[in-house]
Image 1 (cartoon, rainbow, N blue to C red):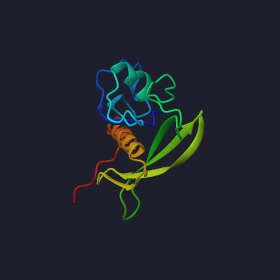
Image 2 (spheres, helix red, strand yellow):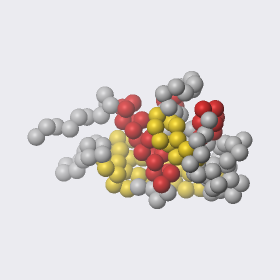
Image 3 (tube, helix red, strand yellow):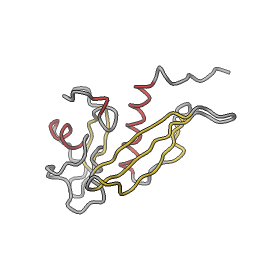
Image 4 (spheres, one colour):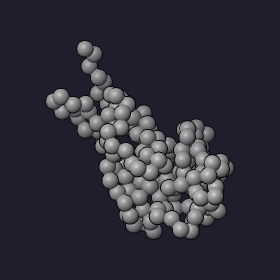
Length: 150
């Protein structure tokens, strides 16, 4: 579950997480804050590790009291190609408040074309989904069937 106000930009290669692949976005990310009044502020390394990449950041001084979500969670599965269509990655998301789902839905990504068929209307959640899918593809690369050359 990532903080809903976190805008991930690039992979954070020097994070101190014990199991980075278990992080909500598939690995640690650096980025900036989008909380009202703190737009584009760069969190410290400690804040990235304790709040931004994990969500439920009650101790974060940037977290607005009035907010719809505390965290965003993702999951994915690869759907095999059907006759006449590309394989797709189905991404499920859940936006939570007080550890309860507030919003949920599905997004679809076509890895062979690097194209989103459905996107989230909130740019922060969409960017998190993009980071999650990039990590997912990297982890599953040897399990993903390669496109057939024509």
